[in-house]
Image (cartoon, rainbow, N blue to C red; front, side):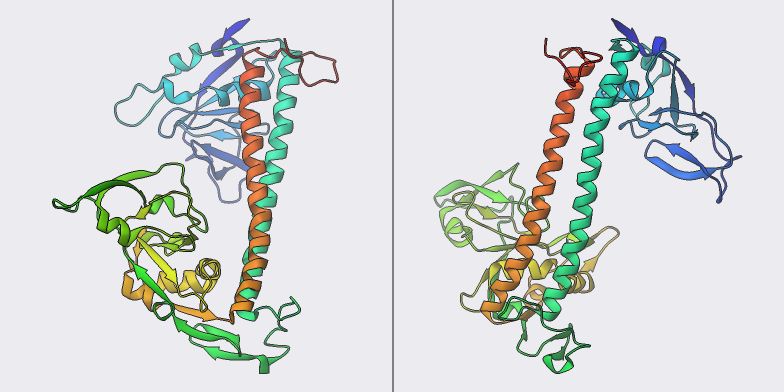
Length: 403
């Protein structure tokens, strides 16, 4: 049976927390973006916070006392409505559809009250909520592992790019244990066998196509090209590739080859200079002028080593300190990139370092793929269970029985 939200719960306006907000409070103050303060007392014992103004994103579930601010609604279920089930119903509903404001997005309470859901009864509500909360727990655990491995990878990279790898596959003893194995360089202490060389001495660095530039009357072609958005931190996002009209000569000059390292000219501080290795994924592909193509000299510098080194603490620090900075963005030019100091081990050691980082990255990538798979499964289950497409059998060991 389909029922309106008004018949399943009461919808209350949130209130300004000015008179209850305290630094040492224990009650969460909740806005459209989540918790942003503490209060001395609660407005509701439990409920679902839905945006009234501003960000109309996902709702927030609270099973403990909370204080919703005046830009939100507090949806408090009736005694015969399971709160977790109703939360998933609201999570599955696109609340942005209710926005009718031309300025700041907002939701009218009357419109919110009219949205409807298939109500299977309280017992089945609980069963559905249990199924979905189980997959939510799996997602949370996987995301926690991703964060853990991110820290592990960062620590590993710091050790690898400061201590290197011996022929036996082990890290060198630390500088505190064996100071004779190290030398001081402009970027800090590095192994004695290494050299510090500017990137421009070990690679050709080329800027890319300028969009809107005049081509002339020469033979032209539509070529796919990479933008800043395609070059992420350590990988390429090729989900959306645009094309540009260029001359055949320009294509020959700027065509990407497997092993080219792509580094961004500008972007957020934490992503500036990020490098990713091109593997020839798209034929006849070029790059925009905001992306540098770095082609390493064979026998001197491995592309994968350079990409990982640019992701390390050394790389990020250089790009941030050398960049031209604005409010939220930063940029570097080709001169600065050519001067980029790279700690250079012998090729065999570069390969060993790269292998260690790749193993850690593969583990992290596998966890990210698992989290994505779980998210997809959750969306599918929400659609099936909340709409009644897949009916739930209460009391059965099976999570759901297909119709």
